[in-house]
Amino acid sequence: MREFLAEITTTVPEGTSQDEVDRRRAAEAVRAKELAATGNLARLWRPVGELRSIGVWRAADEEELHEKVLGTLPLRPWMTITVTPLESHPNDPGNADSTK
Image (tube, rainbow, N blue to C red; front, side, top):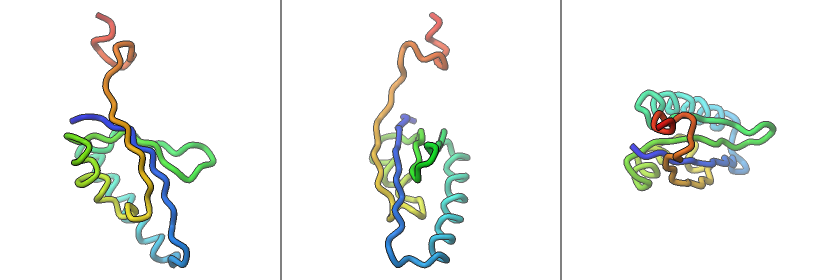
C-alpha cells in the first residue's frame, strides 16, 4: 500500500442538530478504529487549538483512498480534504535502509 498525507477540515452544516453531530462523531470513531485495524489509517493528529486533522493513510492508490477509505467516513460529507502522496526519503530515520 502507498502512503498519503491527508489534511482534513470538518465543517458541520448550519442547522444540523446536536444529536446528528453526536451520532456521526461516534460512528466516525468506530470507522477510524476499523480502518486502523486494516492498516488504512496509520497515524492521526489534531493540531493544538484547531478543528482539523492531519493523518497518514494507506491505500493501493489515490482513487482507492478517496473511494474506499476516506469516502467511507461518516463525516465525509462535511469534510474538506487535501491529499498529498508520500514516498520514502533516503534520510528518514525510521527507514531501515537509511543506515546503509
